[in-house]
Length: 100
Image (spheres, rainbow, N blue to C red):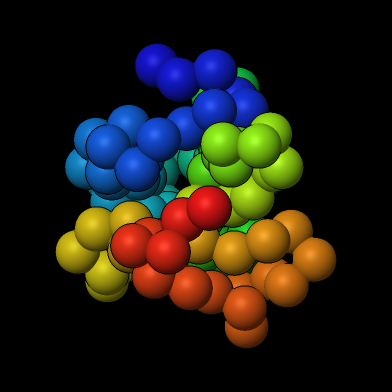
């Protein structure tokens, strides 16, 4: 598993099956699984659950010059295809082909 501050696109994509399963379990609640519990579990890997209803996830990453940014994924997307600077948020998403 990646360290919380250095997820790669490949590592984030490899985590998607687990995340899809998590959102399926949240949609059909099992005992003890709440958005808070899910967020805490994801946080152990550095993953941020931004919106449990939409299935919005951010993976922390760093540019080649060390500047932090987020790899961004929303439930329903095939792969991690976007990123954004922390200050830009979801509205500032850019294709991963433009990762700094």
